[in-house]
Image: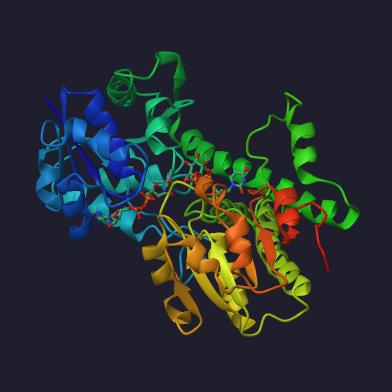
Length: 456
Ligand code: NAD
Ligand code: UGA
């Protein structure tokens, strides 16, 4: 039985290893992390992250061929194949601060692998990294005095949170980058292909050189983020001219060259990766002197920021240019539905701006309140947290829909309206609700990229 170890048991490492373990009973898989609390949660069978279907997936293999441990070094010693799935956030200090990827966690794992390996291993880069990181990893590893040879592969992950289990089970493609020029490199690529062919059709497994694989991951996220910024930029234009963004999304999405997905207007994209990966791309383009290319992609992030600010400005303008001491019910804090993750959530910026305007907020979210409390800790004088949306809205002047949780659609808005201050407003940052119906109840409704429906 081959031993697989994954360093980093987060949103990617945990679910990915659970899927490999469930599909490949002939491999023994250990997922390790320096965060003991996370590991204890995984060990207990209650994953530390909310992800539909994950609990059942973990249960299939936990204790059989899936193990979680905080003994990082011991696990590396046992491993034949090491996946690295540590975080690679935007650097917050020094050269490239605010733009480049912070590779300290990644490099630390490279040195740990080097120190705790007495035989050749395949190292698989799962984290999203700047182009040529695998090369740096290979240089560190192959610097060992005992002439142990490591093969470093790039195998970026394309799962999205909220649908991680189905994305892993039925991926659009699996991408593997390796040294296809050498027999050892080709053999390493084949080892990884062999794992995925346990459940992924062979024609969906692409093999390429390492750099193209690394760059494909950054380009994929940049293209996805760009679609959202493109449609969001049109919301501003639609509001100014009286057009309807839903009609526009439908009309352009039916062009098979454009496609209908990822055209949902929003208060902005969030999540731990889009902004960081696009900024990393911008940073690298500047490094190579490609300033026009860098400016192009920088625009994707700038429009996202603009959309967030624009949403708040529209709220304030609608509420008679002041929200001082007005209660606003924030419906949704997760960066998208079906996750408790709030990293880079657009709700953070909206809440901060409203607090600067001295509003009082009550935040409700089915899964993200624990993280919301942490994100808004500095604003605790102005923010309350309330799991029940009816109580969150009672006495509020406005509701801001910031996450597209389906359960917000099912609420009794007549009851909510009756308990609110008047005039009552709904600002729908996800175009989630039935705006005409809300208007008929008595709300003043401000959808995105559509004319407002107002009684005043
Ligand atoms: P995460 O923060 O949830 O998990 C990373 C884990 O690595 C943490 O639990 C951390 O404690 C652990 N870690 C850091 N250094 C370590 C070390 N030296 N030894 C052991 N453990 C260590 O991050 P994530 O969301 O899982 O993302 C991981 C990588 O995958 C990032 O590069 C990200 O860009 C990429 N990615 C993320 C997603 C996603 O949906 N979150 C999707 C595709 C790719
Ligand atoms: C995204 C990509 O979709 C994954 O393929 C990738 O692996 C991952 O980033 C990563 O590298 O981390 P994720 O951030 O989990 O996945 O979620 P998405 O569904 O892409 O949503 C990102 C943000 O865009 C959310 O805030 C979402 O609400 C927003 N969005 C998405 C829109 O505003 N409109 C849309 O049409 C789609």
